[in-house]
Image (tube, rainbow, N blue to C red; front, side, top):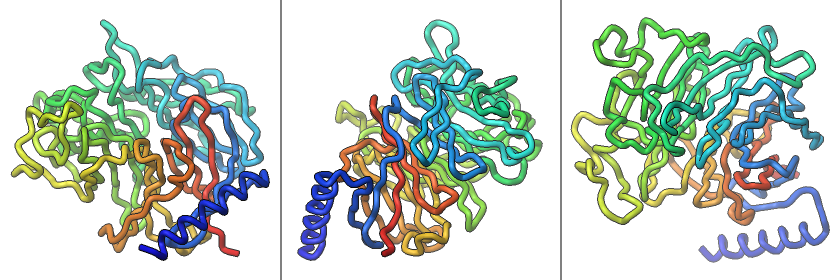
Length: 382
């Protein structure tokens, strides 16, 4: 404890000195060694997600009000791209995740998730794709390939993250629109992981295909508000995480047809401090327990496995952004087991919305604010 306190104090002095000197790179502390943080860009309004372009020097970044931009590692910031769909930019709604097609260098397709308006002031998550123009200024021929049905959100719990499985399928991690019971309703997409083809078609081997009254896109159910998803590079299996209510944020490894409990099983309570009305306990027969759970919610968003060679000290780690805790969480893994946890970048005092591993082996982090930033994060190996 004393050694940690001394290191933390020294770290604080180093940060202060760095800022006073006007240096580009700040230095923080972690169990794997000193952490460097470099600001790449600022002035982003509620940045939500990023995806690197094939040149490894530029990335697409979404802003929740409905803007998609190209940001370069040199700090260049494009004007908003044309051709982005109109979004339901209310409360938590807006333009959300972005991913490149697995065959982007041939088809130049960009996939987006966003909140889409419906009738009577309600909205739901939609997934669409469009071709990035050759001059990188617009999306062409944008088409919607999936809609969350029915539309039930008044502005909250849209999810949502996209993950390609490398086998011709696309996972979409969805929120339950703060309509708790719908997570257990198989005739609705709320609180589900869905699995679709790259064109939005339904794979024939999805677990509920052919069952009456069940949405055939559903892969797993009983989720709350999923804002992190990634393919484990060592197992090839999907991992997701979701916000609990007051407590009970969790990491899951969703399996086909399985029920992950919400709102019947939860480690959290209502924001009012009262129990969740539908909850039967922390574990409930017939539902899957979380792979990892936090009794006190850090407010998880964004997820990236670290399998790059650049920083061996971070190998076999899972990085997760934290909005409430204002930190970058590093879970140390032994196979699938979580064997350690630390919180990085707390000195920044910033809500971290997304984290991705760049082609150069650095982490790239988006902060969620009206003047949000894109940060490059690494280990000081000198």
